Length: 187
Image (cartoon, rainbow, N blue to C red; front, side):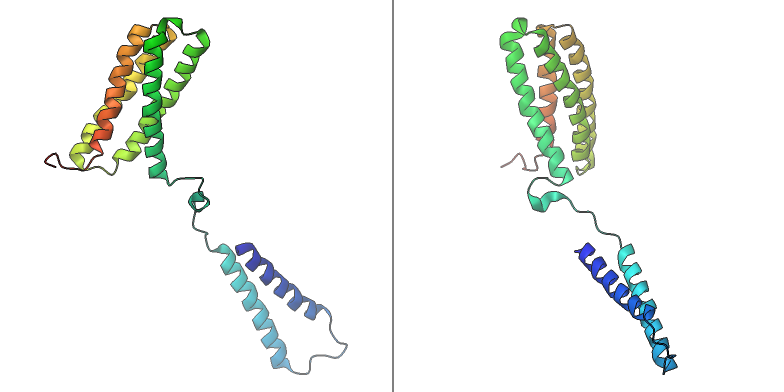
C-alpha cells in the first residue's frame, strides 16, 4: 500500500515538474499564479517526504497463518521439546545399548536444541508472579545444567547415566509447566 502511495506521489510530482520544463516563450502573465504553483509543488514534495519517513509498525506473519506471536511461539517450542524429550527417553530406555553412533549424535544435536528451550522458558516465565518466577528460574537453571551433563553421557554412549539425567530434566520440564497453571488446588 505504501509503495502505491509513493508511486502516485512521484507521478504527480513528475507531471508537475514537466509542466515547468515546457515553458512558453512569453513570460508568465500572472506572478501570483506562478508563486502559487511553486508553493503547491513544494508542499507536495514536503508531504511526500513526510509520508515516506513515517515508520511502518512491525508486523508478524500472524495474519498469514504461518507464524505465531513470540510468546505463543516460545510456549509451543517448549511444549514440543517436552514431548520430543519424552520420546527420546523411551527410545534410549528400550534400545540404549543398541543405538548406533549416528543415533547418539542425533541425541546430542537434540540436546543442544533442548538447552536453548531454557531461553524460551525464561521468556515464558517473565509473566509469572514473583514467587512462581523465582521457582521457575531455579527450575530453568537446573534444567540447563542437567542437559549439559546429559550431553556428556550421550557423548560417552552411556544409556544408564543418560536415562537418570533424562528423567531429572523431564521432571524439571513438567514442574515448569505446572507453574503455568492458574487453577486453584481446591477445585
